[in-house]
Length: 590
Image 1 (cartoon, helix red, strand yellow):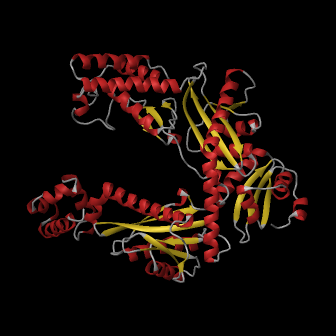
Image 2 (cartoon, one colour; image 1 turned 45 degrees about the horizontal axis):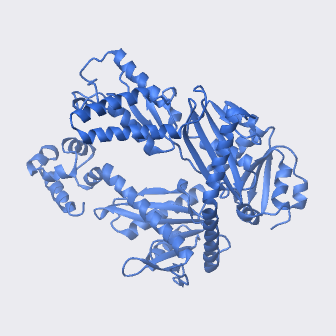
Image 3 (cartoon, one colour; image 1 turned 60 degrees about the horizontal axis):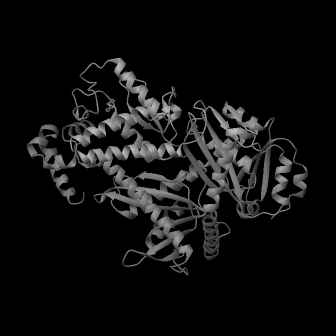
């Protein structure tokens, strides 16, 4: 650890943002402080453990920017984190957003689940958030079954199945009285706000009818619906006035871990909760404030926040432009205390597992670093390909920081149609990935993990040499049964890693994840556009003919079943022959 005593003496006691750098001049951590000198001194004058100890050991220099206010330092910190993506600023990486249920404000309304609420101008018709996505889907499906709302995105030309099974009023053909629609909306809104009376009554009536007509299967399904509603409402019980709409945030810390708990209170009911446990850098209130900013970046900010008194109330009010409260007594204080109890409980349940996992990861990193003779090892990237019918290659890249997946940096690649083999696809993906590094002067990993041995490592080395880049490479060598058996370095030497070791396990996890990611991308393309991709490969078929074929047949199966004469009516005799031959050739590979 370097001695910063003289430099720290020159740091002002004003608010601002500070940036920690490693020996290569790369920003590894960005923070903010009300008092820059006091905050920076705390890193170098106290006993450190965990993630903070790792950070300080990596610091070779630091810089700071003085600001005129705490809000300004907060905004600067957020912008610098987005700019540099420092490896120790894990708090602002998760872009997870919870879904909401929307009852559309249209002449003929629909009920659906949405995630991107920022685009919605009118948020009065949104209900949630729903931390449990399955619960949200179940709620929407149940309401759509009970109430005959419009089910299609756009009105169809004729009555569809939903009309005939009494789940739609036939808005495309029939004139529905406005009063009937408004009555439905009123009951649905009432249920989404926590009053199940009308819906329970309708389900009970439908259940009795099903039972009387001896349709016991349907009656049992409806009974299950009623039980689900009762179970949900029991979990929502918080003794508050219906006018209360706020999010309650609290936390607990222990042994370098921070447990953050969020209660979503809507119309006096607890509609959901969120918990996350992360390594702490030592300033818990500040880290919770940062976490809140990221958490609500992709979701809907509530009307009010309730927070513990040690957090910066005025700063959050200024940033979010909403009221922030710290209750000192009464029911609201009880809710805030309950929120902290939940944070503590979650931390107690998971802390030992997290601690053990952290220790194992750090030990495995040290082992790999020593085996490869590296001074630093944090970020690893791995690549894999998948293909459609032996052609139409796609590639995937996954990124792991300290053996933890960093999904913000996962990338998908569509491969050139000229590529006909795995090695060619791999070369193209690696070239595109690291050519971008040169052009944008962006980060490069500490290690590349190849799925294979000498051949794959050699191909990767060729690409890196052509780009004049030096990045260490290892390969996961497979045996005759296609299972990973050895680890090979970029000098084609086998590393002494036991197959039952934690290092071997962590590297295998990277391998499994990149396989999963590439195959999922391949399946997505196959589901959404495989037909289109195949047509692109047939000589004589351009955009116009492709659209006509898709419009007429719609699927590979129907196109294969079509006669040559049917194909000729769209693409002509010569092209139809080539198309039919190609379709039959790919049938066994589909």
